[in-house]
Image (cartoon, rainbow, N blue to C red; front, side, top):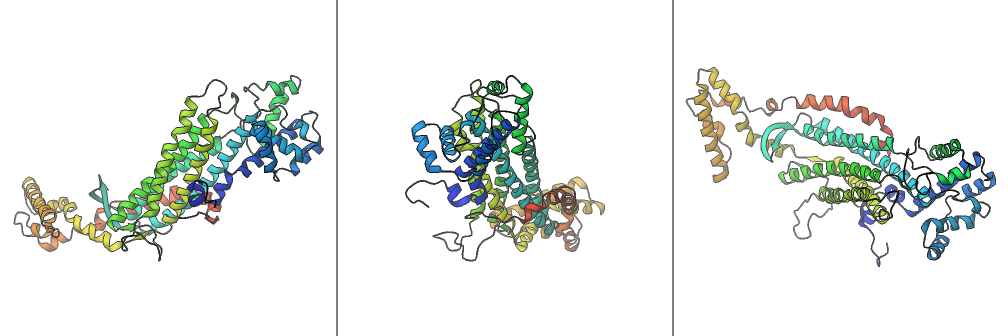
Length: 478
């Protein structure tokens, strides 16, 4: 690490080696060279004066980029694409005359961006599946463990710990659908020329439109794409960047919601993120166990959510066939969103794989609130014994308020059950009332919902991407 210059924490602390390399200069410029090889090969196969020897020379130097030469040329030419053409040409003197033949800068720049974004989405897809696999195991294990449900962060009807996890998973599945759609729909820019008319290629092929179209098909096939964009200006539509970062924003939204829930559960001492044996929670308070991983997820997610506005604004402000005000912005906003979401999913994987559930604390909280939740069933029993439903409802309401006062104002345990057992109007013994206090009687179909969701919705996804589960995580500081 260079201590004398700024380096984004996304690289030095958070993002994985795979994602960092994907948006590295080496990956970018070697992809440029692969595109130049594909262009030259296609032009040779379609009859232009490009030789097999020239193509072979280009292929031989795809990865051994002379960056010193490129930097030297850029200082003179003030143009990064031309600088790399000259650096490539120095290594490939026979092929130098035909490098970039008929193309404009966006041929390498835009096509490379599409290629890198598709590879980035593929990496994120596999990480999403890994998170889902850990949450699936967690949901299955705790599918029947009753816990307080919350609306407005106020105690509501019971759910289960596993059922709550399915809500996190369902969000991720929506994100996975979006990622799969983007991967499938991404199209290469192809070889469109300076304003998207392909005039330069039409000139090269002496007016043969079929060969112009065939060249694009060959380039797309060599780069692993089934299609190119049907029409464009000099660039592919910047709405593509906006759509992809909206998809990344969706992942960040889901992860932040999960992490926020975990932070609240950590405060309740019910569920916690992993905590290492020698981890320090606070420099001042030795007892602290701060949910720092989840806090980091939320912080990075906020960055992604705000960053997603950049390509949307860029797409809205492009002029005609092209302007260059997109370039500086997109070379920051797009890679950094990918790096941030990669970091988020590494953290999410780490947390989901080691969630700590404190069952006794959960049970304590459930039993504190359960008497209130059981009042409707208790009222029904009292009515069956001949009581007046309306009168009993009112009396239980009064007793509930009294019990609430005892809890909130006096700091004493919930004594609603004892109060109801002493109430002659109800006509129920303490044992009869306590029979309604089994938490499992109030979780509805939670276990069955979890089982069906895991079997019918999650398992097919995990099976489809089983190969992703074998990949080693290479995140930095988690």
